[in-house]
Image (tube, rainbow, N blue to C red; front, side):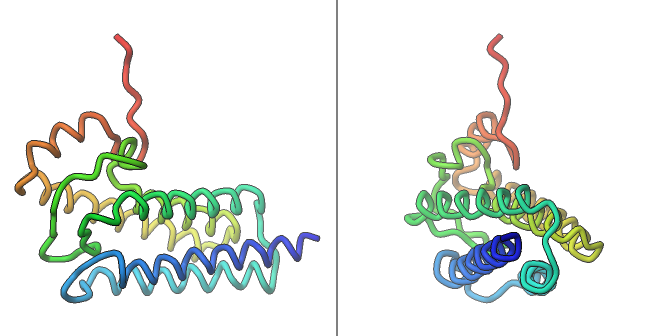
Length: 184
């Protein structure tokens, strides 16, 4: 039974990865593929390969936690896609960040970077599923890269046409985690 569940987890992870790959080409608009995206792609392929080896050849560790994180990541990714369809979003590390408004609905109501949060949850799920040092290093490196990219994007947003709106929005939504507000 666990072997079948490992295969299902591998297929769901692969489906998520394919969805991200398609969205990279169709949902995000950048004139050229930014250099930082090549690094993200290379690390992602290593991470996916390791997870697939464990899912299909060996056995996943922490199966329930790993599968839950991957499913949550997938759901968050689809939710973010739904609420950003009308906006032009740039790829990570695009030299020319295109901004045609601030998204404040859906997952953006809670966190300012739901796509990155989705990716981080996915790679955390993969790392916990394999408990392999290389997989943990991939997840840690990608977390750092996504946080760095998000900080760069925020700097561009604050200086852009919607800077005032963005500064106000930052007070309501957390960076990668929902903001916990006091009732005082």
